[in-house]
Image 1 (cartoon, helix red, strand yellow):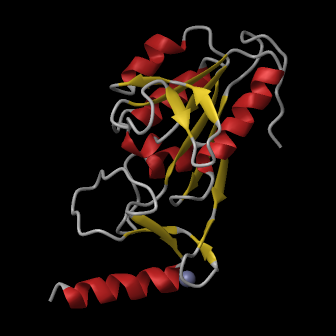
Image 2: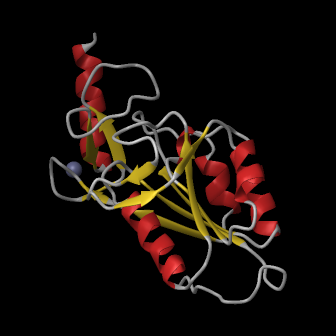
Length: 198
Ligand code: ZN
């Protein structure tokens, strides 16, 4: 589906791909797979992530499977335009944490001939569309929704249920903080929490 085209940047048009889904759905693995293929095709690849995500390692995108690829943390989406330079394929991980300027930046990069591949959570822990992801999904040429497995019933999971009582939107965590759930199990879990909270 996603061909690594060899034409020079001046001859080609860019485009935007979005990989979205819940926690533990394999978004970052899919991002890394596409970027590695572009590297095999001898294309210039750069990966950026928001400065807020400092899990594990400052300078690596680290997936849950342990596969890593080098990346650059940036404080704001506007930094991408400065840093993209002559890059042919720009990867963006944890895009939901970027500011609202990210969609316009991605459109501008695509217009300059860049292939932009974005990975991010489509919904927050309450099932609401997350940050700039809705706009990115609307404007992208290609959208891939990947699924985790519901920890309670084994169906496909699309929700990231927070198992702790934090109210903040940004709580980075692993299996002790979030569990992927299907819609039915997510609704039951939210109802149970609301009952418990009175
Ligand atoms: Zn379920």
